[in-house]
Image 1 (cartoon, rainbow, N blue to C red):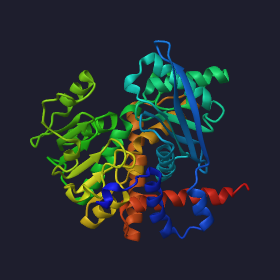
Image 2 (cartoon, one colour):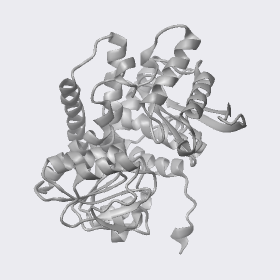
Image 3 (spheres, helix red, strand yellow):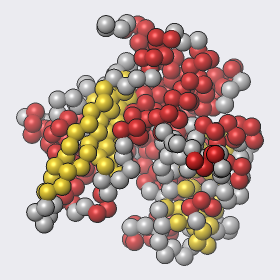
Length: 419
């Protein structure tokens, strides 16, 4: 069972995907070295006071991976599993995610090693404000623009923005995206990632001849991304046969009432106790018979161990890094199409770009306009990825990296290296 003992490095997996595409681009060795090293990694302590007066110290991170195409862009994650390796990998992915949909951003990511479910709102606010204060000199609309991620919310972004404003003594809503509408957020931002997942999935289903009517869809992870994607699949006539969250999985071959499941999860803060389907394990959800599988939780859930049992025809990566390289190769051998994370879940960063642009202009768009522009950006660039895949006879993931790397390298070659 050598594979079971595999030492997992999220950044190592990300580099493996990069290398596959880079080898087809005949990159200069020096350029390859530059692209596999982050521009800046920041680690710091976050002391804060509990509501009961006790002092705690957490660890905060911010990785700014690449600035070739614009300011760094990427979320802030609050989770017990946050590490420098994970944050670096996520910042690396953000570099290619922004490039593959042709946004004027580089890649960044941040996080705090904590469990937000155990913290009161006041404790979360104290942690966020200290985290923001530590980064005041290195973030900003033209430097690095954070956003929500796992364990963070629009409210967290509002606290971050306010802290930055207090230090800078200026109202700067463009320092973060994913904010509430009241302080410069964009309409359509909350739904953007899930909407993007469904948009590219439906386009690929059409390409593969999969009829949407009664197509079976499984969504692993029922947070913001997974639940909204599930709702949009259902709106198009698909049948959601499996869903899951941290409490477990739920299977109903006749179709899950997605609106009912969302309402239940909102009321109970999880799917625990949901009776709209048979209770199964999270692992079993990934192996259900279906046309489309959407892993929309955390990294490395599709591995060489469970890849042989995956029954989907199409995998759409709603999460970042849900598939290990070994599993990805097996899916290619089995003829399972994978729409990679850097494209499939780029709807969120695309509307974040729209929010950043609206903040800087002081002019805000209608939600219908946001959604229309989102579809235009994603589908136009998805077509380019498919064209590269067809031309080079490579999977969609490799094609997406080829397109993204080429765009970043062109920017770096034009700018030159300041050495």
